[in-house]
Length: 143
Image (cartoon, rainbow, N blue to C red; front, side):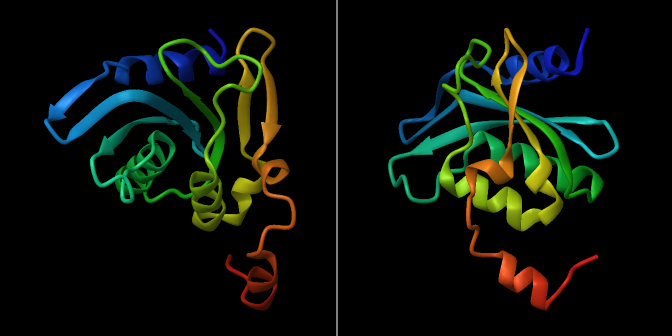
């Protein structure tokens, strides 16, 4: 079993769409990430009636990684809704892309699975051309 299948299985375990309350719907978008140490963490999306503060599956998975291990570096990321991603139908939203870069600038090299069948990936940095944070990183390098 390759790493993408492992990530898909970890994400799929979180996939069970349903209402948490009359105001919250969850587990309909899921994500699994591989941390720098090789361990896999998963997360799921939560949508509410307020909409503005809803956490995406990618951010939940990254926060699970950080809370459980203190790590900030993500090697690989898979996000989907029930079925494996194909032809770029599931990539992190703009807010998640920015959050992942802010978590660690090393995440610019995170492989995002674009197509499960072909194992085609894209680097996070490719989705953030001209990222606004580079000048700040150059002025205040973080180890």
